[in-house]
Image (cartoon, rainbow, N blue to C red):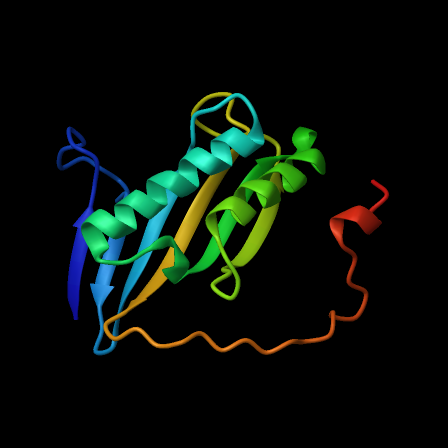
Length: 153
């Protein structure tokens, strides 16, 4: 397996984490990106900047695109929920088009390390060597499912 580690300039040999890791497999490249804090005044602006950074990174360094994203983990300050969830959703709708939607996880946290950011995100992408059409299967909602609009907290 071929592995490429991406890290920010100036981190030196004492770096604890990579910015991203790409591993080459037979039919695809797997890319895992470290948490990114997007600049901006609102959760939507921060999400848009982080998604734009990931899109640029995937295109320039991995021969991929944002549509190759399989999972995004959002770490969001609890004091900004549930409004931040709606803003992040709006930013995602501007960057992803059906059927190429990633799985998402949103985790409420008490604070974001690295400043007074509203959110931090991690991304996983699977970049195929040969592109194929995306299949879509419609599923019923899981038992007990509640959308953002249904919540009362």
